[in-house]
Length: 270
Image 1 (cartoon, rainbow, N blue to C red):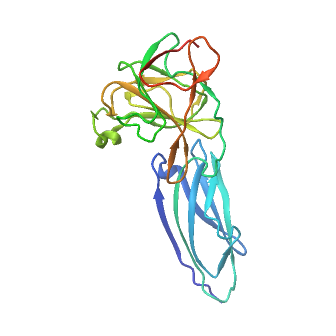
Image 2: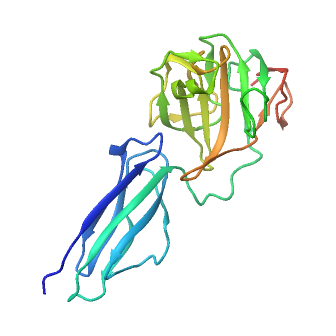
């Protein structure tokens, strides 16, 4: 008996991921359908899949969250099997997705980061964790530095996102959409974002493997900023939320890594 087949797709694309770099689709099988994903990004992508099915069962049961590895093609998500071939079939889904491993529980909390500027250079930390200006409930650091200061990677990883097209700056949150930045994915599943770089100031591209201490771009005064500085955060990323995390840096000649304090000067010795 001929089956009734209905196919509907609703896509919600989260920031940072170009639609052509990630997609969920299906392949027909002998018993129904296989739902798969292509992830062309250089970091894992987590997707929430809300199936709308009738006369089909999912091999994943009620599971909705799936993590698709970086640079994967036709990655299997769930297999849908027809229950009764004599009855109509309905099949569609809605999905939301974003960078990162939604299931990430642990990461390297004691990693010793490099200060994100040149060896021998000294800069003020004008705003630290939970700062009163713009860091409320956020583990973020602001290093005051002139426009055009060279920025160096605080940790090794791979570049997953670059925005360097903006030049506008203002002192209220409405200008956050004009932030220029470089985002690097770390081996432990965390991300670092280097924000307010100058227009055209990125010297790396998406997909570049970055070593610790590598020159990556130039600081600026772009987006939501009260003056020239580098905004630095490390975070974990879930589908609908980002969580900044505290970091420790090697400072002075000591080998021990410490959390930085607001209104202090720091010199990179390594």
